[in-house]
Image (cartoon, rainbow over all chains, first blue to last red; front, side):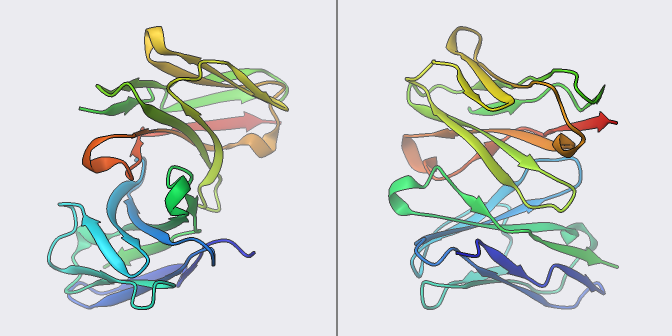
Length: 114
Length: 117
């Protein structure tokens, strides 16, 4: 098992552009979570999936953000019309439904919006 | 409302010293879970421990130990004989087991630990 992987690791984009990040969870994990972390802060919950169903979205997730998990395996997080305030580390985590308290995190994608 | 406070923003000690990272939490639930995660410079959050609210027994794992005290709503983390490789940001987190947020981790702001050689 290779753990949770995220791509790309770093992304620099200009304000107004769209970006998409990918997360590959641990293979047997049916829950997948997205968090955002800014410098000096703990992660903030964005959304989570159970299999392919998106079960909850934080109010932090504006309409410019969309996440999918089409086949219940990998997930993508898209940010449209990026703003400088979107600059952050985007973390993905996965867990089993029966043990959703134990979340395993990926290395994150660091987004810089210039 | 639930909240996690890590009052120590940064701690710096010399290698081999013992160091304790404080965590104070707030919750109205009687059933909840507490966590510690380590985030090294590489950025990946590493799960260290989970405790449930019904188990106040302290835990030791090698050089790491955790002191859970419900009376003071604290879940402190001690590293004994610290090593340079322990340098990282350490996060304490809380998850409630009831209501709509039984999947969310509520995080503290983290404590940056610097171990000097």
